[in-house]
Image 1 (spheres, rainbow, N blue to C red):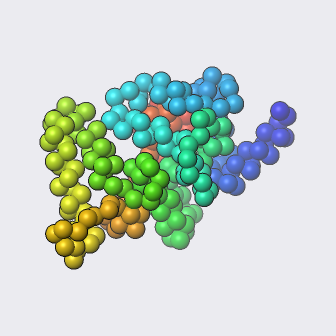
Image 2 (cartoon, rainbow, N blue to C red):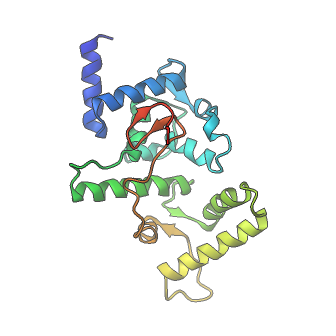
Image 3 (tube, rainbow, N blue to C red):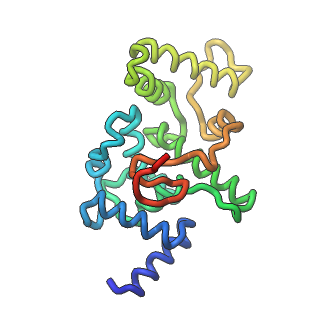
Length: 218
């Protein structure tokens, strides 16, 4: 691959993801480290990252990289392996706004981040986070921390889902069945949360606030 061709491909990726050429170059170095200089990476490559070992939602994080919904396309399902462009598309969800980002662009960026988080919890791709899916995440977050037992975590998840249901469907009858959290409900739940510049990813030894490879000193 010649230098001009590499530059051309990087420019294409820059236009597609919003990353600068320098950021793409740094991310490509990290991709090569993860893949062992291969053209693709698998879930096993990410599963071997030490910083992910004790993360209670490690599986959801890894699965997100192979989820076709996170490629800005109308596809569902999962990839067995992903190439650098697909890797970069997922990383773009963590790209913070710049000083030049307009309010309209910030809103679009926020929606992309929310959709990414929603997809992590909507594991069966049906457009709804069910009680079972929500309970599983809460159980993993709480019980694996060692702070409380699995039954207590389950009770907390059930109570939280009931609270969400009463907020999103205030006139729901006692015997009504709440199907789960839609993306619209998810947006409302997180409406007051400032996440455009706070949704970072550090477990790849890439600080997405600057998008430079290497361990953060903070």
